[in-house]
Amino acid sequence: MTPASPEPALPQVTVDRPWLWFACYQLGWHLLLPVVLLRLWWRGHKDPGYRQAIAERFGFSQGIRPGAIWIHAVSVGETRAAQPLIEAYLQEGKTILLTCMTPNGRRTGAAIFADAIAQGRLQQVYLPYDLCWSVERFLKAAKPTLGLFMETEAWPTIVFRAAEIKLPVYLINARLSERSARRVARFGNAGRSLFQAFAGILAQTELDAGRYRALGVKHCEVVGNLKFDVVLNPALVEQGLALHVHLEKNNRLMVCAASTREGEEAIILEAWQAVLQMHAEESASASVSGSGPASTAQPLLCIVPRHPERFTEVAELIRASELTLLRRSEIHLDAAGFQKLVDPTAAVVLGDSMGEMPFYYSASDLVVMGGSLLPLGGQNLIEACAAGCPVLLGEHTFNFQQASQDAIDCGAAMRVGGSGSLSSALAAAMSRMLQDQQQRQAMGEAALWYAAHYQGATIRIMAALKGRTA
Image 1 (tube, rainbow, N blue to C red):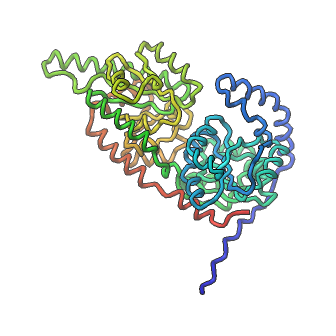
Image 2 (cartoon, rainbow, N blue to C red):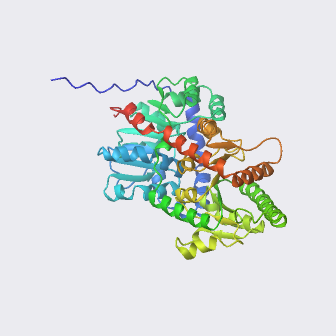
Image 3 (cartoon, rainbow, N blue to C red):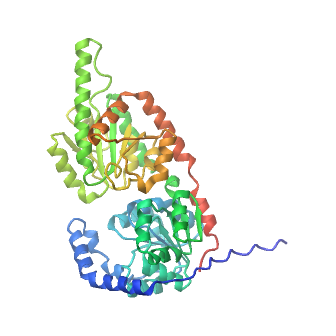
C-alpha cells in the first residue's frame, strides 16, 4: 500500500509589523471613526443597505459559524469573480464565510449563492473595520481555517494579526497596477511588510507577480484570472439573445456602454449624437442617390452605469442631451416590451438594473467598456468577450493591463483615443464598427476564443491552496 503523500507545509511567514506606523494607523482610524460613521449614514440616503447590519462592521456578527473558509470580496465585481472558486469549494463539502464591504456586494452574493445560504453552507457578513479590537472580535468568533482576499484587498490590522495567530491568509486573483505599486512604495517598509505578511499571493499575470516580488514577497505564484472562469447566467443570456434577434429583425444594432463611471456618460452621449447624425446623413445621401435606404435603422445605445445610485443622475444627463430615453425597468421581456425598442424615437436605453450584464451583452453588437475613457483603470471586459461582443477600450486600462492587451492582441478589442477629441474618436470608431458587419463578426469570434483560452484559474488556485489550512 502506497503511503499517503504528506500535506504541504504552510509557508513560514515572518511577521514584521512596523509598530510605530501601525500605532499611527490605529490612531488615525479611531480619530476618523465619527467621520466614517457619518459617511455611512449619509450613503444610506441613497442606499438604505449602508444603515443595516452596522454592528457587523465592528466585529459583532450574530450567529457566525466558526471553522469556515473565509473569502473576502469587497463588492460586486469581486463577488462575481469569486463565484467559480466558491462553487468549487461548496462542491467539495466546505463551508464558506463570505465578507464584503458594500450592500451591492452583499446583495450580489445573496442572489448568486441563495441555495447555499438557505442550506447553511455559506454565510455572509460585512468585513469589520480595520480597528484592532473589531478585527480581534471577528477573528475569535469566526475562527476561519483559511482566509482568501480577492484582488487588491490588503487591510493591515487583519493581515498582520492573521499572520501572528498562524491563520493563513492569501491574496488571490491578485493584481497590482504600476500606479498602485508606486503608491505602496511611498510607505516604504510599512507597505512592503504588509504584502510580505500574507501567507502567499496568487497573481493574475506575470506583470502583477513581478510587482509583488519587487516588494519582497517570497511566496508568489501566477495562476491566471478567475473572471475567465465565470459562466454567464444562461437565463439572462437567453433573454438577451431574444432581444438581439428582435432588434435584428427590425434592422437595429445596439451598442452597450458597460459599467460607466462619473464623467464618462457625457463623453459617450456626445459621441452618440455624432453617430446618429452620421447615420442620418448616410441615410439621406442613400435616398437622394437612389441607392436605396440605409442598411439599418437608427442604432440604439444602452448605457449601464457601474453604480446603481447614479441611475437618476445618468437619466437626467440623457434627457439633457435631448435623446429619447427608455429605462430597462420599463421593458418587459415580451413582444410588447420589445416593440418599444424598435420605435425610431428611442435612442438610448438606461440599464437601471443590477446583475444583468449577461443580458445587456447578449443583446448587443458592440461594447464600449466603461472606466477606460477616463483615468479610472477600466472595468472587466472578459464578460463582454464571453458573450461574443467586440469591445472598444479607452486608453486607461491599468487595472486590467494584461487582460486588455491580450484582448487587443488577439483581435477581440480595439483601443480608442489619441491626441484629439475623445468623443470624436469614439464616435468615429462606433460608426465604423456599426457599418462593418464583417469586422464585428471577426472581432466577436476572436472575443469568444479569448474568453475560452484563458480559463483555468479556479483549478490552479485550488491546487496551490491544497492543504493550506490552519
